[in-house]
Length: 439
Image (cartoon, rainbow, N blue to C red; front, side):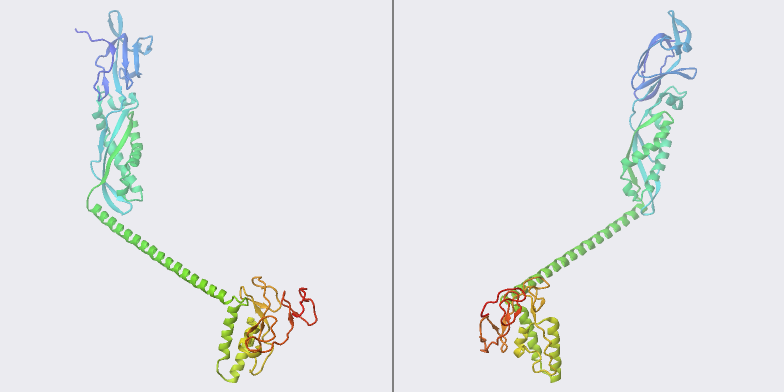
């Protein structure tokens, strides 16, 4: 009877695509060498029980080093050396080549944006490696002598497709966006599917190293064509709305530019009016305001009408003078002697109280005030006006240079504050300014 072969050196001699490899010989001598690479594990099995697991390294199998060998002792004695009997399996723990996956049938998914059912398909690849050699052997290899990559694909194909289909449909419908848009987020969806598939592999002692999505596409059917048409119409509406917004902005910009131009023109007109006022007021006595008031009063005085109407107009003029503060000098331009009520019925001599106009802001300043109550500017001393023709009479003149009317001697006026100075006074009773002789 032929003797069974006995091994002195135990190592893995399988092909590269093998996940599990059984050493052909089941007997080895005490002191034999066991070699385990870094990418594998070695399992020692006796009577269907895994007695020991060896990781990467080189081991000398003796009972002194590994007491469990006493349970493996054989009745064979070779050359006076004890022999041991057991089954030895090598489990590959390296990353195996990518395996392809794909949905065999389209997945019916409701588009959350368009509320229309679409048919979605996906495909990609994944990489698996053995994480726990003992669990992998028990759950997947069992009584088989070996296992390769194809056995792994066949074992997980159905479980993978089921979990991928369910998770893919749940992910697409959970978003509020269009499915066509969400399908482009392949990296994000791959991370979600990795977490879903990992528990399936854990049960078999495996782990998912990489999971890739090559493509997620929508089947070109009537539903997809309908959505494509609606998306095109939506895009056209968005473009039209955007164009309307741009038109409104342009119209608003033109209106704004027109308003700015109008403001500029108004400002230029106001500046021109201001320059004309300055030119007409160069005499220093508010000539512009005086001229405007004189024009108004001349127009009123020249109106034809009955005596009663003219008398009423005279009373209105007197009240306006009292309220608006038109100077007596302006009245002299219209009414001889400065008497507003001259020639009118029911005369009222006290209606037109003397007031002055501020040369800076045109505010009414009561007689006797040194400064304007509105802007604070100093008020100039009023000039003498001819009672006959209303012309201005320079200081010291005894006759009107326009009509020759003698200038009546009136009260002296303080050159400093404009107050009246009674005859015989040498100083102003208001400000104390000395009154020059002959003034």
